[in-house]
Image 1 (cartoon, helix red, strand yellow):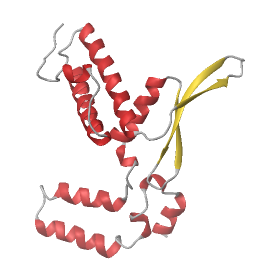
Image 2 (cartoon, rainbow, N blue to C red):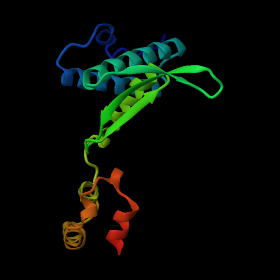
Image 3 (spheres, one colour):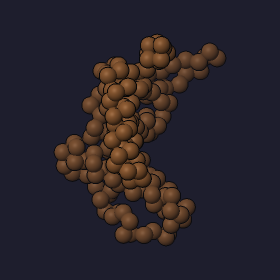
Image 4 (tube, rainbow, N blue to C red):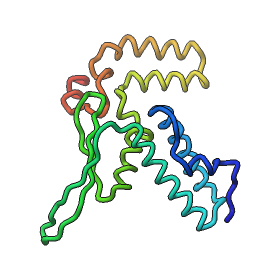
Length: 184
């Protein structure tokens, strides 16, 4: 088995990760990203890949257990042909306090979805607005354009867009009506 031991300390995943919920979540998140990078780098053979995938699966479960405060439950559903299947489900709340149900046919798949929600897709936990994207755009542009141009972009933003309701509304909840009100 070809493994670079300096990439991920193997012993940290053999026992449960200690610490408070946020410390444990941060450590698990770092381990999961390290697992993903290692798997992409083609430094493992088949048995090493299987071992690291299993370690990643366990670490994702531990991460979700540390950050997800709601219960995970299963229930039976029946298809049209009469066969039954089990769904695993839980609830999460978005930045507006709206309840969303996440479900999957496999428990590990549900843990993957929850990991994506809390860590990878964490922008869904914060309000994602045009104003935030404009500020990120300016930070990026500062590397390539003059300060005078940045000031001009900022002046135009303030004059034409800053006071519009559409720039402070969450991008995930924009509707056709919002765009009509903005452009008409």
